[in-house]
Image (cartoon, rainbow over the protein chains, first blue to last red):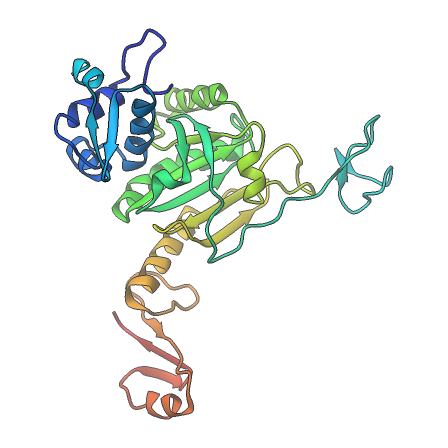
Length: 71
Length: 233
């Protein structure tokens, strides 16, 4: 996974997205908060969902309990 | 692989070795239809076409990493990147190379020229994306993409395509001009004349009825005749 390093740590982009998700947000809102391109946020969120760190509901994304521990 | 008569595919590229097989060029994408979806390995991780929804996207292909014309284009695309960003346009490149080759080329370009490459590159080793977009022209090369540029709008519709041969580097000003023209046409409901650039007069769509043609000359536009009228924006 591009957002998780082989040693299990998160890449800087993934960390920025996780940090921005301390409150539920859309990719566009995260983009405004972090200056990361929205396409990259969507791709990162997809991988964070696969890793069990993020959940989606009604177009907004929020951290799971496991995701909270990465903050 | 070359054109030959060794098997039943004389008009297409074919292998003339032990396994005689034909390679028909893939279908070409069509303007004003949805751009072919992709899910690809890139230098910025796995990306899908849908990830770019809501913004314009320019997808360009180049024949190969670490080649001379491609390197000049690679730098030129990086140089117009800020202008593309101002226009709400994302940029992504593609070639039939591995992601490791792409990463090495990006790093080498920065090391040798000082130019940082801010956009992702698709590593299309199996030619899946290149084939879907008609980037492989067997008459030019069956192993490399030719120099294509696809302009995809925020709804994922393919709006314009440019194809250049292997020998000829692209004109970045034309790429910016194309985006300006497409965005102006969408926003103002007008067309743009030959050699148009921002600030020039635009073409008012020709009337579609006889009544419209009769009144057009009285509407205050600069007209050659009823079907060719211009206005300033």
